Length: 288
Image (cartoon, rainbow, N blue to C red):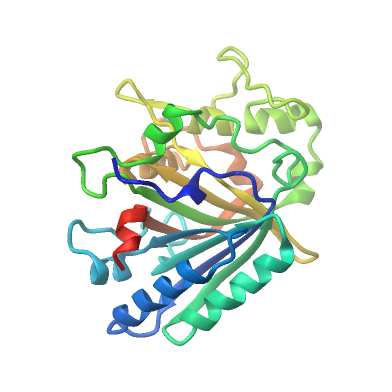
């Protein structure tokens, strides 16, 4: 099995930078390849790097399979990017220097369409106060959920969904804690998921922790909160062994699967940017 990018699963860093780029021209793929080679070779060892590609750039770099652009039939803002760079570190100074290196190497060829400065909040909580990612599988199950299986196009890599979400924290925090828990489908203090009897039909857990034709639709979540005086939210990052799984989960949240139930979390947080990506293997990146 080819080697996945280690930064996908390494959760040791507390500081994060996400950069979404759009190509300035469609004839500069070779220059971007050279820039990525230099970046991978030049980063300090305390920086964890993940690289992923959107539809347009992937089509210029690899013809083994096609990547679609993000679309959910107009229900979610589609802002498909061309290149995703994710930097992680425990040291803010090192992270700043790494980001400047990225911009120096890629700035002439790509424009930044989104920059998110994220951080681990308390014990891995979202800014709503709820622990994030408790439904993540572990061990071999995490690899199975996140990585494309052997025999399939892109084997060993991962399909990725990123979304910038903006929270309505004032409205959410006006709810009593018990009602906040009903929105998520788990307890706030100790992150215990409700059992089937207690789970509201429109709870976030109930809409996203699901089976499809008897197959659990598990993904690997690495979402990171961000916030300042003007805006607070979450940069959602989800890795999956198949793109269709991510699409199905979004449709279930938005009541596009015909069940008549919409995820209540959407009353208090909305995505404003969305892209599909493919995160290739270490071997693929090593051949740039």
